[in-house]
Image 1 (cartoon, rainbow, N blue to C red):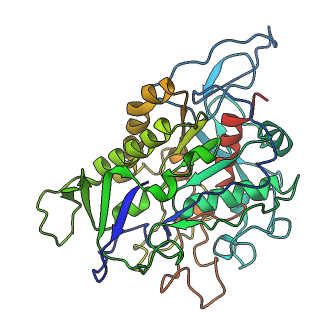
Image 2 (image 1 turned 90 degrees about the horizontal axis):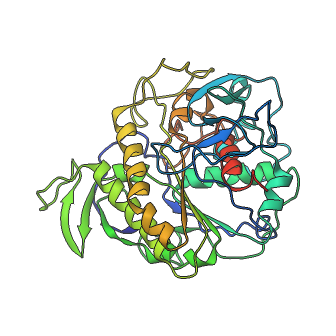
Length: 408
């Protein structure tokens, strides 16, 4: 994401959903993926229902108001949007458990730490008018033969990586082939920065991609880009090296307030522009949209929790205004950089999971990402932002499969 610098010694204004979103930039050349090639898919957020009269027929993808795709067509027939739908009961077993996948971080290991109800595992996402195919690990690996993929974002990106690894490990166990550490823009990785992790004021350079990840763009065939939660931190925004604004609640001599969604839009536009312009990168850049938190009866620091055991029904809970603005900012950033990316041979895609995940308050660890008496991070006890593994987050990998591998 954009270049950031942390001011030491400042205090954090409490904000919902950011407490446990560790700002880790993941540049992971997944070993299990690096053995395979890629077969490209179409870019729109539609799949195709098979036509009974002509099962072998094909047609071009339907256009969409969104600039990119959350899944791709798999067969000929009528197009349908996989981003709109509902969670329906599913008696099938999850792709993996904490006993069959060795990659689950304790903070998302809800089975191990005794989440009272496992009802959250008994639902699947059904787009309007169709069924979403299950993830086919063998086909994904075959489609990714000889290719690598980077996940750039915060700890929710790591959450996604672990989901994907767990699904793939049921077919082939990943083997580590490199020793490069995850990159952390806060300086938590001592070999990257001498600064210490703090929860103070940030300098965010909206027009400059952080070279600690941007320098690696051409090393990968595909990039999955995310991270929105850390924009809630008290921040001063810079362009061309000059302070141009701040977000609310910042004690600074910068008087102009810049709406946070506008900063999100600028930062994603800069990041996508850096990817599109990078010499040697001609793959797909996927933007994953915002995933809402589900704290109720308080915030992360005021006793909030997430104890529901079933998904919301569609229409039962409206998407919050802030979440809607953040998602819109991401969509706008993709739309604004799509033409330049295409000119340079780069395809931009949208992994739009916001609506689906807004309906899953039951899929978070809550107090069950650690032993009783333990914490999520520091003094934080409850996690209603990250997702249990296995859990609803496995949908992200199902959609990624449709975007990158379904045509292979």
